[in-house]
Length: 129
Image 1 (cartoon, one colour):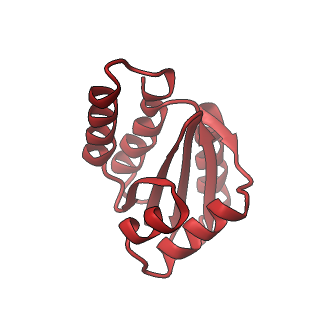
Image 2 (spheres, rainbow, N blue to C red; image 1 turned 90 degrees about the vertical axis):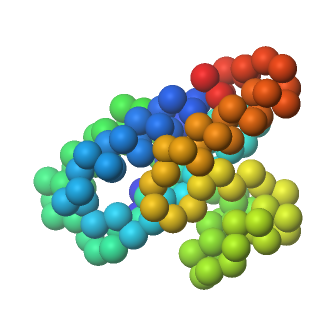
């Protein structure tokens, strides 16, 4: 069971990480975070199906933050590559996509990406707020 959403900015992405850290009963297998010029793609894959209440609650939470996402072929290939064990660096080089985080939900990786990106630009784009 997986959830794939598109989010407007880094703060919303970080809220998902915090939510998952606070809900240890959710069987999270991995979380993938991809930064695009106009927003963030977040995929949360569960180890097994959630019960109806958990699924409804998690979908409601995710829909408060973003919109369900239907990836194009390039992002599908990125997600498939990561899930099959290819390294994030290899996937980024092959598909020219910014994989910010893959694996255990990690706030530090997202914040570090945001910091380095903003430092390099010299200003903070809306998607990194």
